[in-house]
Image (cartoon, rainbow, N blue to C red; front, side, top):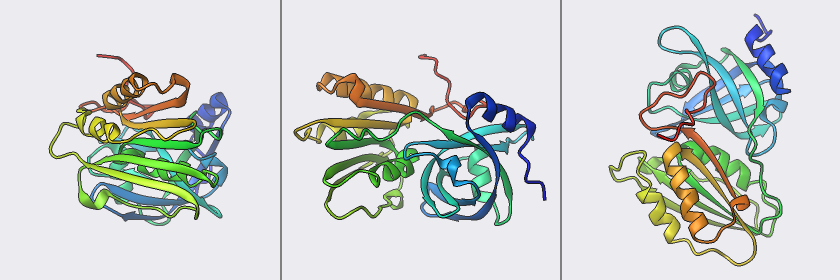
Length: 254
């Protein structure tokens, strides 16, 4: 059993000043139509803080190794839990659907630059199901009293997964049915956002999901007066395009 990461993972981690490790698959379980829960055992420092993600090294359909990035849903003892969107045939989704206990996987982490804004009184999390795991991990780190609002667009009713939160935390969930709209159509989330009245005091918005949708949502929040520094945006994927080899969508604006 080889527990040494690939040389490319070691070099990538060195350049990023993070860790490269080999983790073991504990389980991979479908938890909704769109999501698999993958549990890994290994170095939990890979998971970083709430809002961080990690990179896994998987093969695409040509046999070439590529990397995919996934937000961490949770950490428990020596285990890291991921919620992976598996309702497509990308290399990460195929890995999540076919992973078996005992499989080894190259992991680089922690990655990401969007931690929880600890100075905010309320937090609104807006996006599609790809952001749900990260949204819940971030919200579970909010100190009481505080408030978490979720506005999440779903393709399937069973994707409306819930989570447990500390008693005293104000939690509101708005699940929006995509209702056949294109994944790059922001209309559903804009409608959900319009139904949300900003609470008093200081807030922070976290926009995770499709590239164009998160871009439009950011503009809508700016138009409503939320300061730019109070908006964190992370595009996890881009409709109609395969993510680059580093696991992220292309950043071109066309």
